[in-house]
Length: 362
Image (cartoon, rainbow, N blue to C red; front, side, top):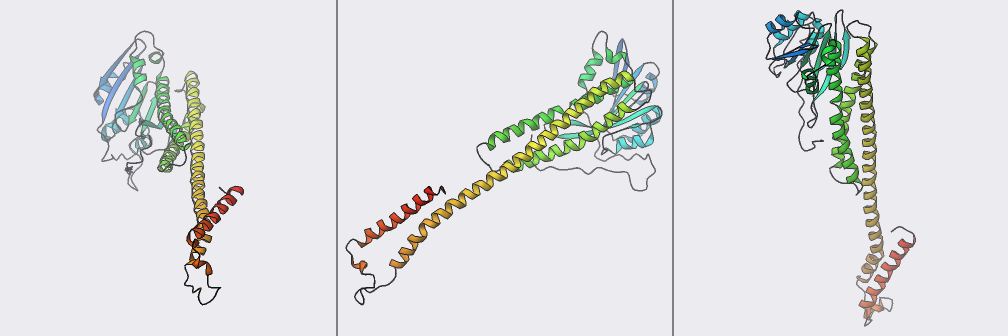
């Protein structure tokens, strides 16, 4: 999961110009093309219209108990603004849809709620995107930056034959199901990070290795991103549960409470992973330092052994004249002087080696 060999590029989000009127919609030049998917929901049937138009929404709005508009791509701000006006969405909330760098939050208005979330777009690439969820008495509207989402289980439940709780309940329950899918989508990247941490831990049992520190720092940065998303996500879910607006029923709050438990579990997992990585980084530094100390100790011992040998070689290598004085190294004329000198120096080396072993320095 940790891509240490590839450069990571961050795209700067386009913001509303300074001084613009509140609710001004400015499209990001890099935004994906807008595509609408209209799902019409009744207790005993369901109908889906892909590539829907505003006219399809207007024609179907009053004939179905619940409608779900899924808008992927934020390039067509005119269509987004028209949907906002059609359902009476607050202009500031619609502006937050286009400015897709919002902190996860939940806001409540007279007849609808707005929830901004970060969802996992690609678990393997650690790519996230903002998803905005509006829901009121008979509608749910989702805006996402590009196609691809974790809503397929919800779509399959809506399309299932027979009695269906998702079709039979009100719009707030559908909004809960979508939010729950977003929250559950975080388990996949967190499990991938756990696998990476376990692999690094196993590799580290053999000692510090080059490249592990970089991988751990990349993983810790990813965990920091997850932590920064999950904590406000928890607050948004708690706000949905605490609110007293009539379009969020008591029954749905029970299910939202379960989603809040999932978010808390994710936060606990991320905190545990962060602590584990911190411990592994400290362990790697300790192993590296210990290895460095071992090398320095070995080099010091080798140098210590050769110091007296170097001294003797230096002394015997001086220019002496034994004919001038008996103090001028008479052993230079010894027949076995050279092997005797080598044996003497070898004895000193063994004596120093034994002394270091006795002191448990080796």
